[in-house]
Image (cartoon, rainbow, N blue to C red; front, side):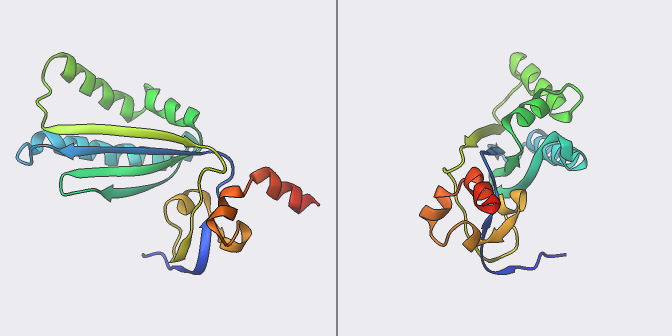
Length: 173
């Protein structure tokens, strides 16, 4: 059930830009379970929906907690276009949930029991690097694949300098 670590140092096999979405919730009032539990369950339902349809573009995700009140998901997407398409698609659960949130807000029925947030980033190639020591594929490596660190460079500056086009030219030459 648990992934075995890949011994040694590895790095993520990401090529090109990387799209990262941080999305989460903060429980402002623990006693308002009827307010925050549906939000939490909705996130799990959306993740399940995305897991069943890989063409939607979610490559990987990590569930995390920042405190007993704050829970979030780091998501790695194939492209910002696929992220936008999922968020706006009327046949996907996210669209329905966001509509409910917006209607409650317009009607003045939001009482501040639960906070919602997200941050989205498009990280250009050359602006990210990763290293994993004796780890199973995790985070960016779980989303894009995992390769021995030597393929991208022993040092962080070398991994930052890696370019997909350069790798293709080296293999062809």
